[in-house]
Length: 72
Image (tube, rainbow, N blue to C red; front, side, top):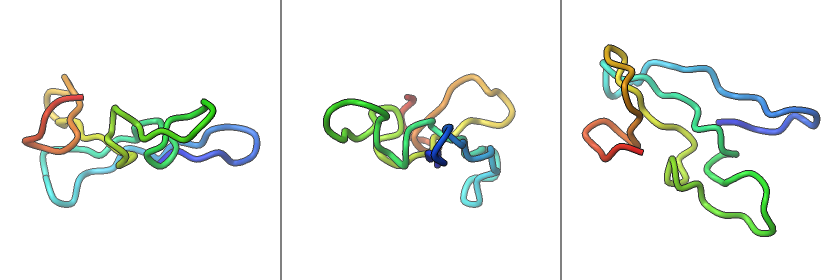
């Protein structure tokens, strides 16, 4: 998951999903499931607080919270 190293945002590399062989886990870009900035912490709406979304490796068309789940 993305994190702040004191000077810049560091993103997690894309990795193959261990549970779903045709899917990759990609970094959502939020900070461990929390949206960047704002007055109070808010759970990220794109990844639903997980910090990663899934992308179908072959099509690369859309991202989903999890395979067979709804699209972001």
